[in-house]
Image 1 (cartoon, rainbow, N blue to C red):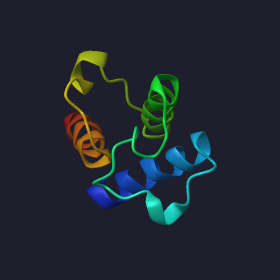
Image 2 (cartoon, one colour):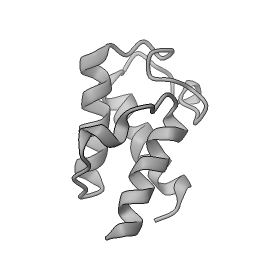
Image 3 (cartoon, rainbow, N blue to C red):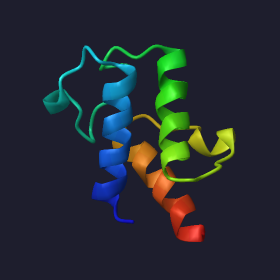
Image 4 (cartoon, helix red, strand yellow):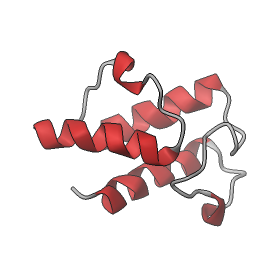
Length: 82
């Protein structure tokens, strides 16, 4: 699965968790905090995305993830290991 497809999964989950955010606002360079996500929201977006991609990623792998592009990169690296 390529980055664009993974980003679409993440974006769908951002919109699911943060329904007040417009789709046009969800871009790879955005941080979830910038979109109004609290810590629980950030965990939900990550967990829903992993579930949609049938992944189990250790939490430590997300250390340093700031933007949605960073999140996509972590998810893609684990998909490539499958």
